[in-house]
Image (cartoon, rainbow, N blue to C red):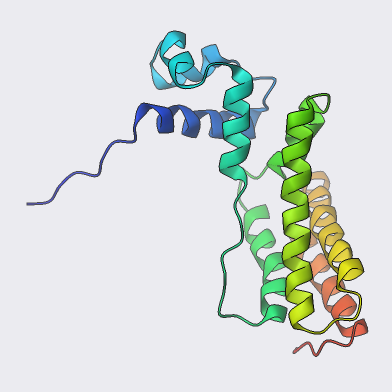
Length: 187
């Protein structure tokens, strides 16, 4: 006898709905009334799980803060694969950019939002740096910053141009940077 998948608990349902609405429509544009109505619950129920909209925003950003998984791929494949992954995400109809940049653009005066955005961006740069160190790159700090800028630049270009190939262009720029740093990059 097959069992039905467990229904997400209320806190997860609220967070999933807030995540979708905040990302697609904007944090300021979506109030707790909208989130509660979308789920079919009262605001009181929502506030029982998240005492304020700020708490819900913090949980949304924490949910989006995903550490890259370890991989069996070579450091070069992982670095260049970042841009392949971006191109796939750019092709999605619901891609609205980096949720952390979006949050800072909307709520930049909120220090906690800015702090988590900086932590996220720095975690990505450090991920690049650690891969570059495995490749014995002399100035892994500088190159990791350049790669992070290519990621953010390709996201911005895609949003402005609606052109997923911006990630491919950034990938090619990353290849050039890696080659110039003495890394053997396959074709």
